[in-house]
Amino acid sequence: MSLPPVALFQQALRVATPAVVYDYPGITATVRRMQDDIAPIPGAQLNFAVKACHTPDVLAHLAGLGLGGDTASVGELELATSAGFQEITATGPAFSAADFTLFRAVGVTVDLDSVAQIEAYGRAHPGTDAGLRVRIPLPEKLEMHSTFGRNSRFGVNATDHRVHEAFARHGLRLTRLHLHTGQTSPEKLLYKVAYTLHMAAKFPHLHTIDVGGGFFHLYLHRGRARAALRRTARMVEEWQTEHGRPIALRFEPGGGVLAPHGYLFTEVRSVEEHHEYYGTRVVTVDSSAWNLAPWHKPTVLAADPAAGSGPPRPGLIAGNTLYENDFFGTDIHGKVDRGMTFPPCRPGDRLVITASGAYTLTNSRRFNRIPAPAEYAFDGTGSLRELPGAPFA
Ligand SMILES: Cc1ncc(COP(=O)(O)O)c(C=O)c1O
Image 1 (cartoon, rainbow, N blue to C red):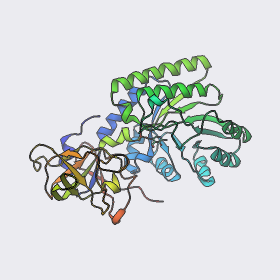
Image 2 (cartoon, protein in one colour):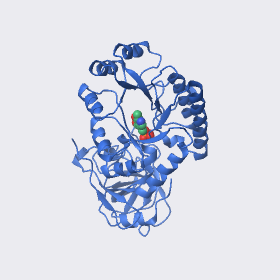
Image 3 (cartoon, rainbow, N blue to C red):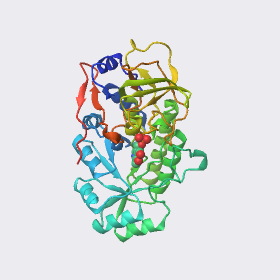
Image 4 (cartoon, rainbow, N blue to C red):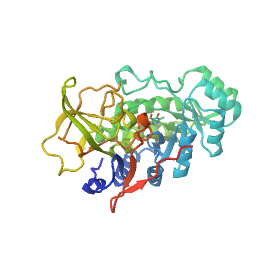
């Protein structure tokens, strides 16, 4: 990622907290890098997982960079359509008949998640194109807590005869395979591409394989990511030569594109220098991890370098709700593990919680009736631009 310019932090000091600031030039640079990295793969395209951000202006910025958008509901479909995404895809576990009709009305082919969903879709729209969300049985060596292969609750097993019978019964044409297995990695990507290319050979109408997102782990080392993407390019080329037809890959990261480029500015409200149970300081701020950042592993900085004095120290950052476990940077079970290291601070100081650009507002809840933070765009010049949130249907 590109580091944000100092101007972003200077401008953010002038807006009320809590505030999420999106670094648009940073987002653009990341998208351009990812697009460059997948460019060797014939016909491949980068899409954005709309579930990660519903802020219309941010979506329009992403659409303007040539991305497509993957949606999980008709609400997200509306946002993606208004944002102007070039291509829209859809996958979710429980679409209604009305949802299918709405997707079809705007030309979106739905990727079906279960035999029951194939039946429901097929009864209403026989003889049409449909995609399939597939579950990938990753080998044990490639599974970890952030990966969902065999243990995914989404998608169907490619070898389940009921799936293919349901497709045949309704005369559906299988045109796309769609997968997402949590965090990916160079090895997992290659496994998934090999697995789905093998499947694709069996379906004459299949033209797209959407390999999902999970780019945090893919990009732990960009050189290794690029090597895997080059290898993917060769696999696709060989497949096309062997089968005499094109096949196009789609990648649809959410967090990898946006999370690093969103900063939550929050004010310190109180500091307990030594909490007897936790054995460290507990700093309570004016925003809530529980309401906004249940999954985030942020780095925490002083927003105003003039205010922060002394080297970073261990501590916990607590949110402003009355939920006991409202702490930033908890483990996957929502519990405080090792705390964080961040600058010394006093009430009135501002902290920056990084990695807040994705799944922050889209996950947000209103516990204690605490409103969501305002959102701003940093455009690289001038002052921050306040962004209207997504309207609720
Ligand atoms: C189908 C699908 N695609 C893409 C993503 C994006 O994942 P990430 O934000 O980890 O890149 C998700 C996340 O849940 C997903 O379910």
